[in-house]
Amino acid sequence: MPTVTTVTTLADYSDERGNKIIHGNTTTNNVKINFRGTGNTLVVSPNASIGKLEVHFDCNNAVLEIGGHSKVPSFRGWIRLGEDAKVRIGANVSMTNTCTISAVEGATITIGNDVMIASDNDIRADDAHPIFDVTTGERINPAQDITIGNHVWIAKRAVVLGGASIGDGSILGFGSLLTGKVPNNCVAAGTPARVIRENVAWERPHLSLTEPYYKPDASTVTKTGYWNLTQH
Image (tube, rainbow, N blue to C red):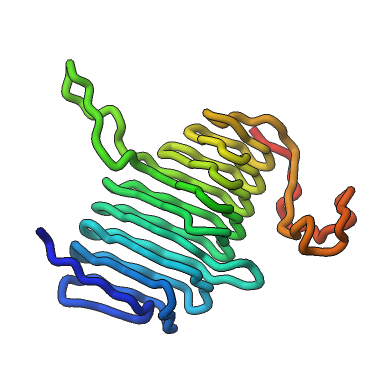
């Protein structure tokens, strides 16, 4: 079995196997980074707000990038990376609770800026175990890339699987399972998820925590730059 090196402080780090952490700061609470392989890289913005971070670099040559935070809740993630995998997470990506993210076999997961992820969410480019066609021996569930755009809201218990993409400004509804593609400024929901409404926009102010406590129209919020018509 490969030797596992566990790092519990998020700070600049390197080891003899070519694994490294680039942070430019020091974060000590709720951090666990496991390096099993070689040549893995973790890059975390110095101004990232980390509520919880557990990362498993299981193989070799994987890259994880996490952007910074300003005036949004913290990042909370359990992340697994396999051989040659890449997970790129933009700025102001927030979670209500720990989100599970997994990429292996050279797959790439890209999450844009200002993404709001709720709780009990999974973003998985892979199924963790291989499935084969009995007659041909061919693999039928290869890992696939995932792309999540800017200013996307992923609601509680929603799951995003390999091959999926979500356009800027869209919403994935409560308990949904997404395997396909969602354009910009849409609401998608269901299992499997499908677009149920187009030409929508959402904003972060909470209905009960941010005044005014009735928000009947757009005059009650400050608009971001993601109020666009859906493009196909």
